[in-house]
Length: 120
Image (cartoon, rainbow, N blue to C red; front, side, top):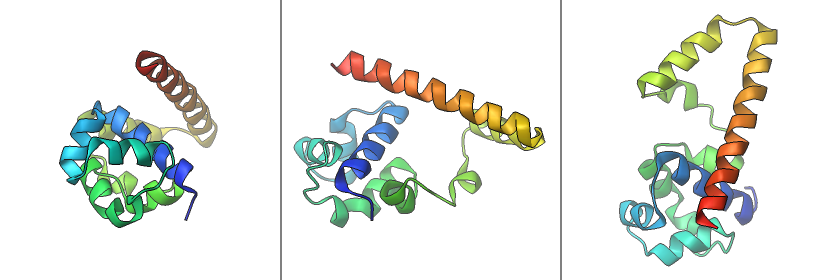
């Protein structure tokens, strides 16, 4: 398993991607907001005992939260935009796919920094 800090970062990132507050995630999982804050800052608390519920609430795989890799993710694209992006990605050449991934990673990093600044 990855360390609690890495899991916490993934939990926080997914929560933010969903546009949820810590209170909303806490309600969905059935814990206190302070428990969510502890998970997100790497003070594991009861993260491992709640991992399945966290993953279900945020519609990601436990494997993703633990290791940053979720083999089920492509099969679970549910939103129209996600499916459209996946279809377009699959139509691209290998070189273009790499370019798309680099671009998406840069955009995600900018979004995370902006979210951090907003919470700041």
